[in-house]
Image (cartoon, rainbow, N blue to C red; front, side, top):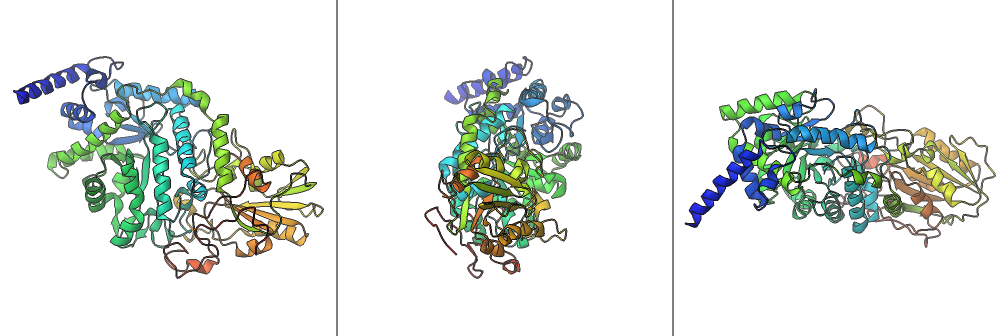
Length: 612
């Protein structure tokens, strides 16, 4: 009798769902079935979907180029929209929200009214929006060793992402970098698996919080798996680590993320022993989905469908495809043919779509699909910047101090040297406003120079190019480092010569100039990775690894002048010479055969007045 009642109830539910497709978008599917569990809602909705609608839910497009007009969101049943490097969605945060609301309304106008996931690469704050709070990149957050701070930063990122119209972020990166030649070292927390686990848990918790709340977003652990451990640090290269090393060193942060309820995991560009990770069924389906019981979305990386085997990618277990730059129509037409011909089973399609729908229900999008306009006022707010400033000060690692630090704010004359000192774009690195970052100031940011000026009571002179005019200065703060880069553009050793393991000749000369003038030199290194600066450390009276601190330059001044102590500790082993990188990997926690200049976890405090 109970079974008959259950069957009858299921039929009634389907009838209600079917009816709801003809109701205006203000009455989405979830409200018609508020007493059902999420799994029941997913199954009921899936039962109503055509193959075309299912394939549409697996499709992810850019809002400005992969669809020619908004109505294609509905006609192609698109499941997700992303914002990447390119035209802004609109003018100001309100314009961004309005754009995504218009796209969301298109999705809700379809027969079944399934809302969109709207994603963005917000990897150190809502870094695509000019005026947002920009945190230190993950390498700097790793240097803080502060789980509570990482959680707060992630929560602020989620809030500012929602305020600009997003409900999904492609963060955190939980790679374990093995070689500083890799152009994405700064996206990861540390070479230490243990530290990465702790900060991954904090990041996921901060981003997702109570997932259905309008101030949180779905997080994404990336890139599964082996992206930071490729031979010679090549982006998208081959990872030759054995199964035991992968299990012990690379998988634990993903296990932590899954245990924390992360909504998505992104497949990696690299190959594993020659097999493309996007098409690696043993790891994606058997390990991640089955053994680790991950029930969220496996999303491809850029053009993952056409680049890594097409139907092989779907059969391996990738659920949502970044169908960008011409992949959309290709994917949708080929996938329908593949299912009709049996190359891809309908069960595989159903699994993918269920995972997408499950996360949309968990996010509460069927009930509340639109961003909250009242959140706009929080973007770049004082409290957010206060937390970011704390993150900057706690991320600074003091590598050397020969009595010069802390500086007195009563010092008569300080000269600040280098273009990185007066440029928030340079101090923030890649993935800041643009994919490859910017080399100019952006809204709301405080330069390192301005932070020093705010702290000092004496005269602060800015000598951008180290002109030798200021031999009477009491101390020179020389700010040197890398220019912004992202992904493979930042790889070292690809023959382009753009980036190197040492400072540029120009920046070495900045330090040389003031050393020869007899001025005390405090060197501040702005970089996305440890660099070979052994000689420059010897030349300097104090040396600070500042990483890529983001928008709050006051945080550097806080530690230079002793308002806060240096508490940062190295998240990576620090190389002593270029020869350290003659093999597959650089000096790291896993390879004791290469002795680093400074080990993982090294970092002085202001109590260390002198060291050599």
